[in-house]
Image (spheres, rainbow, N blue to C red):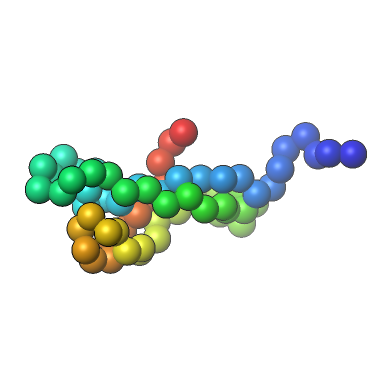
Length: 64
């Protein structure tokens, strides 16, 4: 039988360098990943590479 609530959920991480309204970058880059609700109930911040900024930036979890 399937569980009512899955422990692992799919989340989106958005680049903070692109999403701050800077017009010099062509778009907003997002990563899709999974997190465990029980281990990390708060929002995740990871340092990931952004192809629009051409550097590693902080990517924050966004609300779907």
